[in-house]
Image 1 (cartoon, helix red, strand yellow):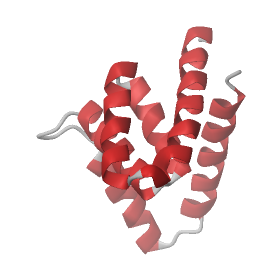
Image 2 (image 1 turned 90 degrees about the vertical axis):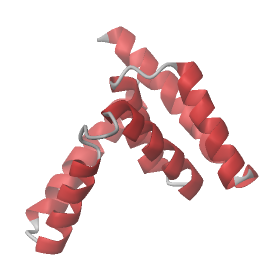
Image 3 (image 1 turned 45 degrees about the vertical axis):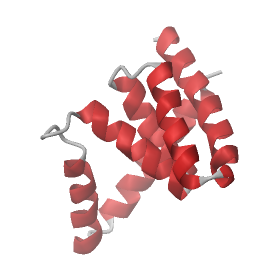
Image 4 (image 1 turned 60 degrees about the horizontal axis):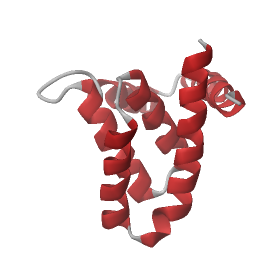
Length: 118
């Protein structure tokens, strides 16, 4: 069942290598900034991943939602916490985010399944 998880991770890694391999300084700096933004600071990584998840859901970016769901699961976020974050995203973003919530919940189930298979 975890094929979406494996495919997502492999595709992301492959394409990031291709993008960064082009050597564009601006793109490289932006990717580095994005990475640094999710490092521990005044907020812990888990909180930052939840914030990223809410923002990504409101912006309706399925790849970003998957990325942050993966991070949230890695950081030990519970389903109850994730659904509270989804609720905030729904209130902020409105009903237009519902299709993205559906895909997020499907991907979450696969992440949880993949974790049990490890």
